[in-house]
Length: 437
Image 1: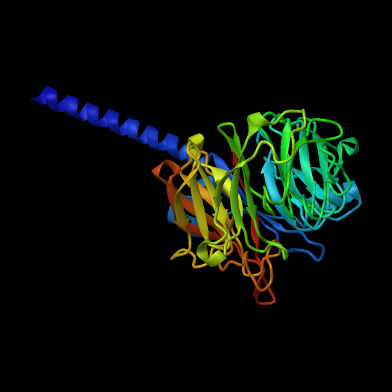
Image 2: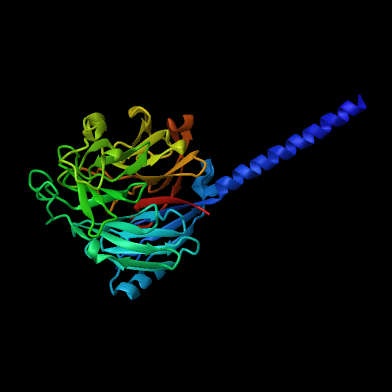
């Protein structure tokens, strides 16, 4: 009896040790990453903006409301660095992505042509390139050899060569593609009143092979570009009937590239579509117009009384589900990537936030939480006055608990971001990204 009792005690101790070790391992996995969010509101007369860096563990559940991020004024060293390197001042940091290795943050400025590179560990600027009129978005290639820049109002697609090991970042002027004046391989004007009325590039999404980039356009239509060629070359063209305007949300899985269309402009304030392009259909040999045809996964333009504005997307862990945000409808549409069927619509408005206006999204490494930039009451970009498609009431980082393996989710908490000027809330979070340490 005494021997049996000792065995029970030993087993209990061993079980306790295993549980503690497992718990520590899980906590370590969750604590070993950062969430970066950018408030694009001005911190200086010239622009600035603010970078918030959260320890991933601090955004676990209800604790997020009290999270204390590292706060970096981008109107400080980053602005001074860009001015010294380019002779011009960057304004309004808008998009943020990491290189494939997670060593550098790539920050694009929507009111100027600046693309800044920050050392992800020190948060210090190590490179800055001014591409000209307006760098709406800058997407890195997975092989880390270049970044494709959507020079929006310049109507240019540009390429920056990148060497992250030596912090060398150079605008490759020979690679530039002029989307306003070029001619497609099929002999059509790239910009055309009927086919593609406004070729301001919105988001250039580079494929997994670092060969092709899918470029969405403000007036509708899309180009697939060989972004590894010099100059970059169109290999597939789509008109505004095939692909609707203002897409900004692209992810690749299962041989498909998902691309959204959305609102946010005076000509097209409201829109909600999702397309799936078969990547095997693209080659360096140009294709006929609108070929291969994308599958229309959903078109929700008439839902929620038509008050819809799709923007931002992420793949859940194991890429089983795709989440697509809607900043007007305050929802996340969940798509099964195996069947391309909508399986849920997550309602975000509720007790945590009555009007979250979800924008860009990022997933935790464990896949159990999604982080979403919630817009402010005075959004600086992509909002149409009188429509207020991007107006939110609770600026900050929303934390959504991922449920059913990604098939659903619940808004758990909010880490608020505030920037009050003259008694008016000016905070406007937009860019968000996750980095593993």
